[in-house]
Length: 165
Image 1 (cartoon, rainbow, N blue to C red):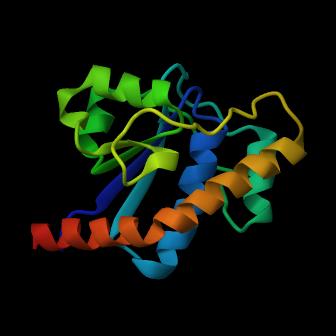
Image 2: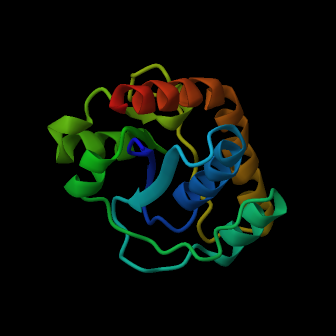
């Protein structure tokens, strides 16, 4: 069996946006490409082993994604090398990924711009410290863009796993 296609979301602390995106995409892809992918997330300034925030877990749960066992991890060159597709939640996250590894070019995108490779554009705002309502809005925003991107993500999974066979 071929290696799994790895998709990584990157935010700042890896306790809100990227875990919600990770959980949402995993839920969507389990129906479309079971066993063919791995979704991970990391933070540009986060520590290791912190749980997703209470409201991130709650917002994800409301939409059928379980991130209750999430543990944060800092972004590393090793994770960048492992990933086949990388989504930064803001332009600064994309810039940090590209700064850390020249292997990130061509596979790193500003989440809302995908599949356009421009790192300039609107990011997903950080809901940290805000209300559950704000987290729900953030999750819906992430879900809206995942819906727009899903066919292209699936196409890339198919192309990536076919190339390994």
